[in-house]
View 1: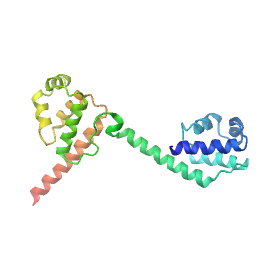
View 2 (view 1 turned 90 degrees about the vertical axis):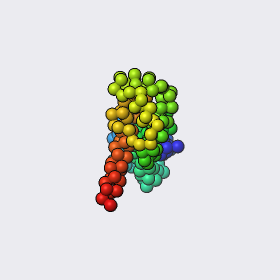
View 3 (view 1 turned 60 degrees about the horizontal axis):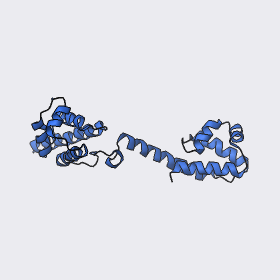
View 4 (view 1 turned 180 degrees about the vertical axis):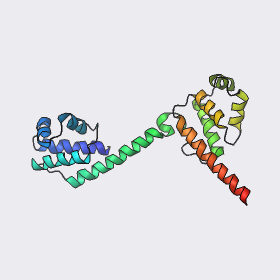
Length: 193
């Protein structure tokens, strides 16, 4: 059970324990009933200010509800909300159904992830990839990219992602940039020795 649902349960239980209708609760707390409804349905998380007004109203009406407990649940719910946002921006491969390079640490693993992506996309032929890329990258370039353990050129990567129908494009390009930077730093260090 999510903490947002747990918080909604605390509010509903406390309101019902003192016999307040939602309309009465809204009038006494100064919070509109549509917002309270969304909080109780766990559709939205109230701000701390609104939550404090709701808890105070319930306590004044005689409900046995602890501000400390409700505040703690609220903080956890905010943390879950933050994680949900991160997952939306950077989804894992299990969530999106397509492969994602989130755990990739080097060029070899990046190319392995590209091979997985090729399989996820239905393993289209190199000729099909070339056609989907509008002919901007040849089938032999795609073949070479999937059979070498080094980072592809950026334009080749872009064309491949497009040809495979990738939805979360930024995850791939961000990881490519990160690995390229690490590779450049390593080469510079070797040259300085």
